[in-house]
Image (cartoon, rainbow, N blue to C red; front, side):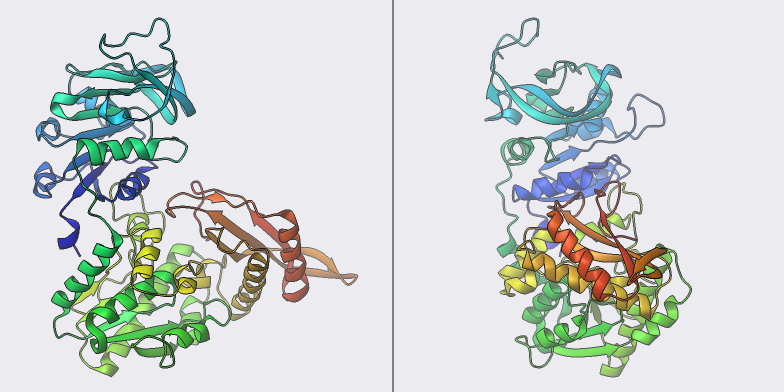
Length: 536
C-alpha cells in the first residue's frame, strides 16, 4: 500500500525512547502520514523517501558519550525541516556545535514552560505571562507565554549550537526549545507527543503543517479508496485467502478485500477453541452465508488440534509462536482444498509491527501471531496486509468508511492468539471454559453499567495462582481470576480504567457464584508501560 502513502510523508527517526510510536500517532492526527525508522537507517534511504519533514525522537542515552546513538551531520543539511525531541534535540545541538551536559537539576513530569509565540513552533501556544527578571531573550523576542509540558531528562542543553535562538525555557532549563529558522532546524527538550503536554498536538501541528508545509492529505476516505484500487492492481486475476478472526482488524481487512476483488476472495475462519463465549457462532452469523457480506466463508473447527499443540506449554512467547504457526498451516491446508491461492491477507496493524520489533528501535515486546509469530516458510506467493500502516482507531475509521456497522467496528479488541494469552501457564479446555464464562459475565456487567463504549479494552484473564477459599462452609482450592480494563487512544500506552467499585463487586460476586473453579477475583491496576494491555 505504499504508493498512496508517499505523497506527503514525515519520517520519525527512532533513538530508542519509550514514547516514539506516539510521535507518529500525533503527526497522523494532523492528517499527515508518518513512518518510524531506526537511527541506523542510511541517509541515502531517508533522502530517497523524499520526506517533507523529519522528527528525531527521545532516547535513554547521553548524546556526548562515544557509544551513544547518533546520526550524520548531513541530515541537518538536506534542506528538509528537522525537529528534535528530547534526546533528538540534544543530539542536534551536539552534532551542530552546541553543548550538552549533565543537568544540575533533573526534570521529570509536568513542568511549566515559557515559550516565545513568535517562533513558528509556538504560534498560538500558551497563556500570556510577564517576562521573568533575569531571563535573557533575544531583544526582538519578548512575547513569553506559559504552557504545561512533559519533561523527562537528566542531561540538558547548556549552550545552543551556533545560529540557534532560544525560544523556550523553564525555571531550571535555560534551553527548553531552540530554532534556526534559516535552516529549518528546531529542537524541543520536552515531549509534545504525550498527552501530559497540554498543547503538544498543536506544537506538532505547527511543525508538520506550518514549517513543513504539509497540506493534510492523509485522510481515511482517500486511504480506503486508494487501498481498494491498489489491491485490485496487485491481485489482478489471482485468488486470495483471508485470515478472518472476527476481530475488528481482520473484519475490516476482509470487507476491504471483498470490495476490491469480490469472488476472488475466500475467507477462512479458524475456530481454535480459544475464542470468547459463543464467538465462533457470532462470527459465522455475520460473515457466513446468511450474513450481509458477499464473502466465500469457510469455518474450520480446529479446537483439538490447537489444544494438542499447546499441551504442556507455559511460556507466553512459545504459545504465540505455536498458535501463529498452526494458523498458517491450517490456511495452507484450506488453500489446497480450494485450488491455487496466490495471496494471504492478514489484519496486521501498526502497533503489531512495532511491538514485534520490526519498527524503529523498539525491542521485541511480544510477537504477534500475524507478525513476529509467522513461520519462516509460508505457502503463498505473497502476504497482503492492507491495514499494516494503521493504528487501532484509524482501523475503526476505515471500517466506518467501508460501511461496516458500528457494533462490529467498535467491538472489543481481541488478540489473534485469543484466550491462549489470557491464561497464565498451560492452556487446557477446562481453563478456557473458566475464562469464557467469567469474561462473558464481566462484559455483560460492564454493558449493564453503560461503560462498554467508554472503556478502551476490558477482559478477564486466568492466573496460575490457586489458593484456599471457603464456599458453603467447605474448603475450596481454586484459581484466582484477574479483571483487566484500560483506557487508551493508540494502544501503545494505556492507563487502568476507573470502574465503579459497586460494578467490580457485582462482577466478583457473579463470577464466584456462577463460574466453577474460581474463588478469588483481582483487578489489575497496571498501566502500559510498564505492563502490556494483555495479561500474559
